[in-house]
Amino acid sequence: MELTINDKIYSFRFGVKFVRELDKNHAIEREGIRFGMGLAAKILPELKTANIATLADILYIANRTESPKLNQGEIDDFIDNCEDLESVFDMVLKEITESNTGKLINSKMNQ
Image (cartoon, rainbow, N blue to C red):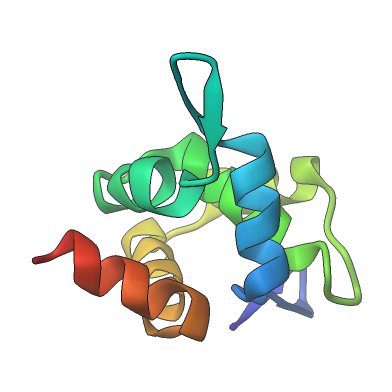
């Protein structure tokens, strides 16, 4: 996925490295055991309910493996000034749910 931010094109990838980073930072803990279910348990539901902070975090993580890189402040500024935020949410959800890493998770959540 690509977004133009400050007249520059940035890429965002929602692959295995993205999911691994989500699982590391957004694990679910039950009875002292950590489960790497960040995408299914936390991220997809929060994106579907238009959580702005989650969108900013997701864009930051998805850009980490790409070049050029954005810092969190640049992403926050982009979101603050975006005139069509709903389409950004839609685009991110579409990219995640159609990626190899998110397709199966999304289908299992919708059963």
